[in-house]
Image 1 (cartoon, one colour):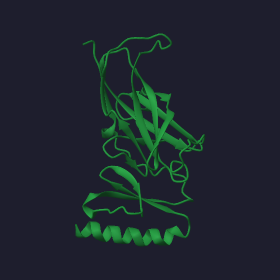
Image 2: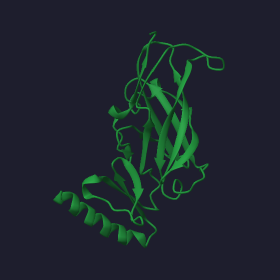
Image 3: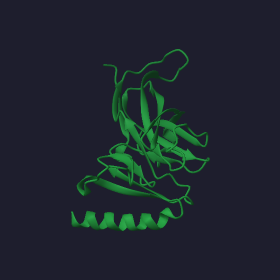
Length: 198
């Protein structure tokens, strides 16, 4: 608890200095991204998961995730217009990028994709297939995207993940369980898809 209080005090001091440069600070509270300070909103130190600083001169993505669902079961097969698999539930992912996602309208500079494959999407990229996701809605200071899921024809266990980039920059991969902060992606947080013949 003492350590969290010291971290919070240091963070607020740092944010005060950065505010003069139009920097922003976000707090992860119980897994949700919120602005700070917010009028009338109290924050219990014990609820703080992490603190994210946004530097306007930094083009990297601060936070993104695989929102829902984190696991899925589907049957193999094909549908019209998609010879490679069967369309199942839509999958959702969220992006935090100051100056973009704090606006209600989507930005054409953002590209979002949903991918499916086997293993780690960073080291086994050739085994993964991606489809473009479309803007769905604004949730707090984040933008939520959705994409149709394509189940492979071969039964087995697969992983799926969201990835985002801004202004055609590098991809940032977002997993579940709190999401990816400042590019620190954990492949163990990918969603799990089980393709079965039932």
